[in-house]
Length: 254
Image (cartoon, rainbow, N blue to C red; front, side):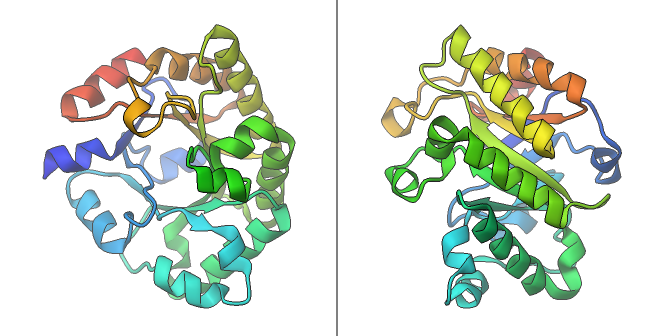
């Protein structure tokens, strides 16, 4: 079971800048990565039992959550209860008003446990074709960084407090070479300037997916972390974690 949990893990880079908010949630070293239709409450509770210090909800489709049947959609996709803390709610979308409406409904649905949600996260890493059609995930990150920045800014303006911040999860831009890593870092700085307090970096490109996934480039994560350090932004390393040994290796590399 520990190996299963480790396969889903992300970890904080050892030299990430710790904000007051990050310290307030315990500055977790091990984070359970968000997974579509997998990161439900029961799995999060199991992950916490095995050492995860921060968990994510499954990716919530903002368009569905904000739509006419949004409450019913969220009731199927999102539950939380006492002990499910700290929790990041992750959204996929490109329209700032729609994502904010989805976030508002999610926080309302949390009810008395709303304080479990310590972060509102924007998915800028999903590589699937459905994300291309829906203009979210890695496709949005590559093709319309302005829209991504706008969503982060709107979430920050409407929802951020000392206890709840805005975050993002990104991939390295293709083709993944030195210039692409530099451009990824520059875009992450734009997210930080718009209000992102934490950025998780998956060390693969959108094209590295499924059978073409290949190894994660941890050096690229380190380069982005170094760029973000001056902005007081926490960086999380993601990708290439198959067991606990990989956790140690990724921490040393990033």
